Amino acid sequence: MTARLDRQIRFLNEADKLKTVIRATQLCDNSRYENSAEHSWHLTLYALVLADQAGPGVDIMRVVKMLILHDLVEIDAGDNPIFGELDHAAIAVEERVAADRIFGLLPEDISNDLRAVWEEFEVAQTPSAQFAKSLDRFQLPMQNVMSGGGSWTDYNVSEEQIAEKVGSKIAIGAPDLWAYAKTRIAAFFASHKKG
Amino acid sequence: MTARLDRQIRFLNEADKLKTVIRATQLCDNSRYENSAEHSWHLTLYALVLADQAGPGVDIMRVVKMLILHDLVEIDAGDNPIFGELDHAAIAVEERVAADRIFGLLPEDISNDLRAVWEEFEVAQTPSAQFAKSLDRFQLPMQNVMSGGGSWTDYNVSEEQIAEKVGSKIAIGAPDLWAYAKTRIAAFFASHKKG
Picture (tube, each protein chain N blue to C red):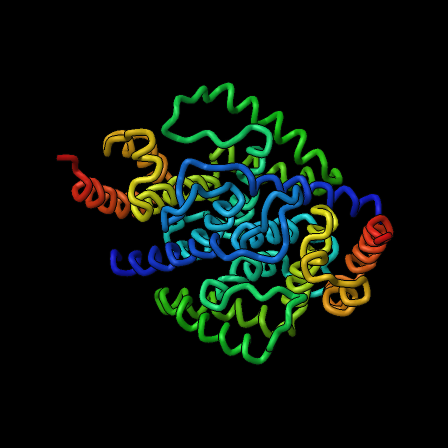
């Protein structure tokens, strides 16, 4: 019993490090960059509040489970800002190695269960995983609009690049959320035009 | 549709403020105090990983839902460190007013649903709520042992006070977790004795 609990607690202590992984998005009040732990919490709330946007076959509590776990690999692999230059194949390998180590801290039964949830999210073939991915992308424009630009300013991103890199992904699992975001992004860029 | 989404997003933007509410516990690496948003995320992970500690009648995903929502009222009411001098009746009133305002930002159907989950947690009469409360208390000693004392040092707390204020609450919903925590707390105090 104690040996099992020791492993569970060691994993939970290791997970604490996600609070120190910094993302490219800012808090709504523009006071600082957000970390991946608080971002993960925010996304679970997105799932509860935007459950009415989920299509057929989506299990919202499975989505929540995915969102709790989805960024844990960043403890080893770091956050990869969506508008940065990314080597997706290399990142996928790095994140899989991280998943082996981090989920491997747990007793085998729990490890297998949580790893399967993470894999489902990564592969993004089920309706639940696609909706979870869409929420993860949708939070970005909502956050950037509020904070006055955030990663769009830092990476000098155009509306077209947002549609390509973020919009297309949101639209897969939550088409109405992309329609909504598009309108808010357009309004933001219209009011922040240079010159 | 857009008016409804506007309300959902306004609530999610308001919730972002939980990332700026600071708790009395530190990160495991002792680098800074943790905020209530990342703490809430950590607790949802505690629920998934320690589900085998839940007694009969506990619905783990209901527990997760409670833990996502449980601290939102702190946006208005602030965090109340457990070892501080607390007026519990006044806090309860303040948190209820906060719940009215914050959940009231949502469309009525979602508001009623989430408010009911929060009320169940607050009243702590169901097995799921009692287990959620136990996890909330259990994270504190796990965090303080790792960070070298944390709020125990700041508030000059004794082992007896921890047993009284934290242990009794953990034991209600998760007796084996309290037995485990007690051992780790004793070891911590033994190795940090003054003199």
